[in-house]
Length: 158
Image 1 (cartoon, rainbow, N blue to C red):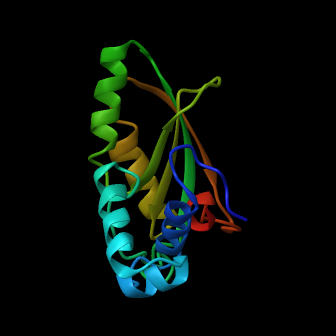
Image 2 (cartoon, rainbow, N blue to C red):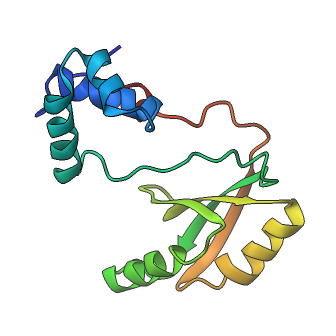
């Protein structure tokens, strides 16, 4: 089901939906599927890129086939939540490749991290050597995922 996004007409929304499903489709195929000719489709694509609706293209890798099947979610509480401390924490988090996602949370903890590693022992090392040493970390709590039921979001089905 297509959603109504302000500033995007049905052609833009269709184009984004198609690209979210398969970012390697040639423009001619996208044009045919949205019901426009190639030139206007190309122009829309360039506009959506320039306006920041499309931020890039990449291959989606299967972490399980790559041996990265251990996922842990980590609640992080900071000792200091002033803006400077948050900025320092954010900058340090971005440098740790095992942290797949980091979200500031409005809760009794400050951040929720999604950490992906090969094994529990690898995760323990990341927690001890990297996450616990991040600026202003007061405490952490770990929740290990047993199975990923859904990992794609609405952007895969505009």
